[in-house]
Image (cartoon, rainbow, N blue to C red):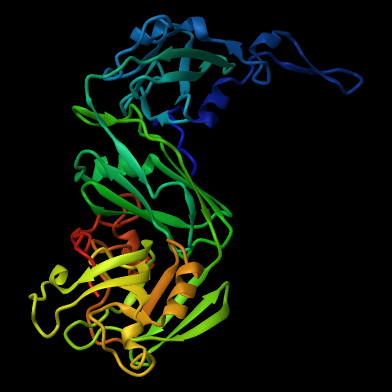
Amino acid sequence: MGHVRGISDSAPSRAVASRRTALSCALILAPLMVWVTACSDSSRSLTGTPYDATEQLSFGPAGDSTAAVDPDAPLKITSTDTDGRITDVVATDAVGRTITGQLSEDGSSWHSTTPLAAGASYTVQVSTENDSGRPGRGTHTFTTGDSAAAPLEIELGPTAGTYGVGQPLTAELSEEVADPAERAVVESALVVASEPQVEGSWHWVDDTLLHYRPKEYWPAGSSVTVRSELAGLHIRDGLRGGAAQELQLSIGDRVEALADISGHWMTVSRNGEVLRTIPITTGKEGFATRDGKKVVLGQERNVRMTGTSIGIPAGSSESYDLDVSWATRLTWSGEYVHAAPWSVGSQGSANVSHGCTGMSDANAQWFFETVRPGDIVEHINGFGEDMAPFGNGFGDWNLSWEAWLAGSALHAPDGPAEAAGSPSRLAPAL
């Protein structure tokens, strides 16, 4: 992900500068057809090596390289040469972040228009030109001090490891960020790189949580790196970015399970090749399994499932209390793919569960050992609710790409959109 350099907003036209530098010395044609000049001041040639203009520039409080500069004060640069002017300024810190600025109309001064980062080392490159059009260059380094502002801590997720092609990235913030401009600062500093490179975007789930996904699934076998460049950045008065650990993920094979609720079958494929077709049972009337794409959240060799965890009164005809094997979790509210030996007679022909996808012990163990977190399980042809994009697991892939971009502070035409769903973590349900 690239950075936009802080090009001065009103630098004089190069064409105008060029016209000002027309040589006043007359050109004389020698007999041997060699052009020479009547005067030979090559030091004023446009093609000459840029002169060192550092001593002709004032950097204000940042001029003392031995003292830490207040990051809340603007950077001001002034030309002290009455025969020169500033044409461009690029200020970059050690991370590669640049600041924008404004050049005065006469080129005598420049000042930053975005705040400096706290605790950062900056290199400033200043381009100048004198009245004869000869270019100059000046370079200066300085370091900013710490800020009294509270740090915005960032927790990147998931944990490092290998995941399926549907795994979203997450960034959880320690403070609420609701203002579109502040969100843009945060989002632009959360950098995602992948090999091979793919198109992707962050989406604001709420004021403290962002998800990142590519336009299509991650390529099988790819590597993903996410890092925060927020450290020290001014977000708003009293709040600056905090440090965060870089996160690296590996993406495994493209493993997908397509579960036909009405047809009572699940087809599991790897990299486009069908591995197994499994008879299943899903949620019955009143407990319908959600339609849509779900990302595997985790796996539990054994889990206890109770009816009371989903509001079924103890002792009712729907009550249950079971130890379940080979459980692959799809939602936080308790939807799993798991072994259901008690319903083998209905698997492949009827939906009799309380919302989970049941299969035989052998098929459930095979499924458990075939998939990993981040793999996709999609339920189709159902009669219940759709999987929510957020709040009950990773339903991110149920949003179109256009709807996904609408939740970005950088890509949405009218700013961040309200995200659907609200976080809820309920006990397992059968």
